Each structure stands twice: as structure tokens, then as C-alpha cells.
Length: 199
Image 1: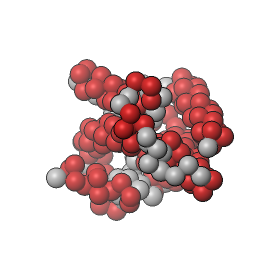
Image 2: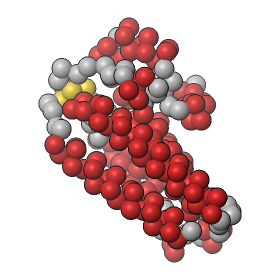
Image 3: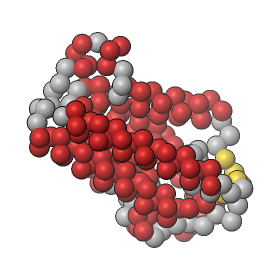
Image 4: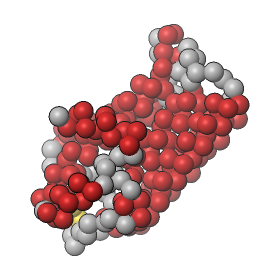
């Protein structure tokens, strides 16, 4: 299982390296951005905390780091495949979004509504892909701590989605309202969570 964990850890390092480089290379002027500082900070704290949870076993209560998922080849392969597919889906979406990507909810100058590629499958493919990658990594870890990390990160993304969709509705009006009706926010496995929070 250590082999799978190391492989997935390397995949995450490559993924975040790519993410940082593309973020620096594809900056474009912002028309409107998340203005609430405390909201931005809470989202960042939830995301950072969620990712750090994976590596905080020595600081966690014993029951959170007791393996509850079998430590075998099938589980390791399943977790690795889910992680790599999730990261791949997020990268596909990032490439497709190009200069319109932003780390925080924002509308760029000359922003266009993207509905092709992964955006024809889900409205938020980057969050979907990373959430699935986190789930795959949690499967490999096999401990309740992994589930806590997944839930923290998912909660942060759902919070971001609400703000982003508000901006997009204001910017694109009926076009975005129609897009919302035609395409789910997240891959179906996560749709029910999103719908429950929206109620």
C-alpha cells in the first residue's frame, strides 16, 4: 500500500506544480472578484486544513487513524485510479477554461461562458475532479481522517460554487440560468450533497 500512497503523493505534487505554473502564466484582468476578505480566508483555511489532515496522523486521536478500509491490492488500485482520473479531469477543465480561471470566485474582463469539453458534463469540473481525487486518496489511506479531509474540502468547494454561480448569473443572465437547468453542478455522485446544501 505504501507504493500506491507514494504514487498518489507524486501525482498530487505534479498536479499542484502544474497548477501553480499555469496560474502564473494565464493571468488576465479581473472585472469582479470575491470581495469579502473573511469569506476568502475561511475558504482558504478549509482547503489548506483539509489537505493537511491527510498528513496529520500523529496529531490525531487514535480512532481517526485506525484503518477501516482493507489494505489490499484491489483497494490500492481503486484509490489510485480514482485519484488519477479526478486529477486528469481537473487538468482537462483547467486547460479548457484557460485565462478565465481564478483561485477565488471572479469574473474576468471579456469573460465568456464556457460550455464545451468537461463543462458540457458538469458546471464545475475542476471542483468535481479534485473532490474525486481526494476521495481516491482517502480510499488509499483507509482511515476516518481521510473522510474528514474529503468533507472539509468538499464543503469549501460548495461554498465557492454558491458565490461563483451568483456572479455568473449576474454576468450571463438567462444563458447561465439555462446552463444550470441543462448541466449538473457536480458529477452525479456529489449532486445530492450540493442540492441538500442549496435547500
